[in-house]
Length: 355
Ligand SMILES: *[C@@H]1O[C@H](CO)[C@@H](O)[C@H](O)[C@H]1NC(C)=O
Ligand SMILES: *[C@@H]1O[C@H](CO)[C@@H](O)[C@H](O)[C@H]1NC(C)=O
Ligand SMILES: *[C@@H]1O[C@H](CO)[C@@H](O)[C@H](O)[C@H]1NC(C)=O
Image (tube, rainbow, N blue to C red; front, top):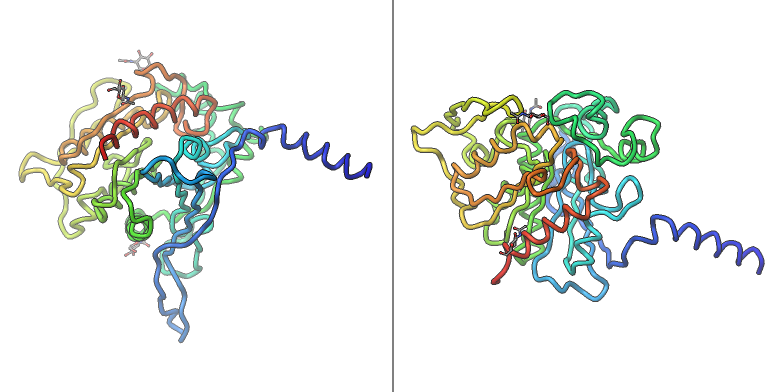
């Protein structure tokens, strides 16, 4: 009796910390895409399937539009569950707001199986120093001018700090081959939209931010809107949507000089021949979001110009311009993540109004 009382007291203590902030939901998981491949020795493997975690409000969704969340390089879907400091992540916020949420682990990442010897490059991983420089302790390194403005990461963002260790420890290996990764996630993502069966909002971050346009290009009628959080783009990726649509045709590009010391040159399509257009995306609203202190502040406007040149309707938000200050690249898990999720949610409501 005594010991079970003690146990429940301890349990309550535990629950009254971070986990009590979490919200109830319904959960299931499944895999999409992939196919059997010959192993060259008389056997078969299943390859290129993608792990999907489906979370929804306990009483069913009250919003008609499902949300698909796609993490970036070296990360997995845990990015959108609770935050490394124990706070409530974006997935829970969307569920609270009535959405059905699908969180993926990109192919060959996390719970999407990695098959040794699949003929791809060896897996890569970020060092802790790289993560400190780019994501969590950027002020210490000042590798770009805006880094000085970074204040929203909880704690010092360095090795040995419990929040940093929780974040870095959750990082995963990745395949450093954009062609492979974009092709595989596009294929599995299209199958995910087929399975959901109703037009969804695709949200992608960083290297996962190139995936929503690719998946939408394959399934425009199943895509309601795209939210691109500091997406990879022509500046930072070897391929971009038109190149995947026509891998045989090389893009002719032109370079525009940086507008000031806080921005980079932009690479856009040349004026002649006429720029190729992302015809399948023309009717799909797109939001791009860039944080004030991130390395993406240098060049995200180039990605926006690139998408607009290709005929896309893009709303671009620089968080610093709308009074949301101090964020780095991982802004959806920083201290003010709720404020940014509110902004994204408002945009989604606006963009999906009227059916
Ligand atoms: C560049 O960024 C730095 C740091 O935020 C700022 O002090 C400076 O005024 C910026 N320069 C321009 C031209 O905006
Ligand atoms: C990258 O992936 C593509 C497509 O799967 C493959 O053809 C190519 O050989 C890969 N490159 C390397 C360096 O492994
Ligand atoms: C949503 O629409 C309202 C009304 O038009 C507007 O005031 C608001 O700025 C929009 N929000 C976003 C994030 O676009």
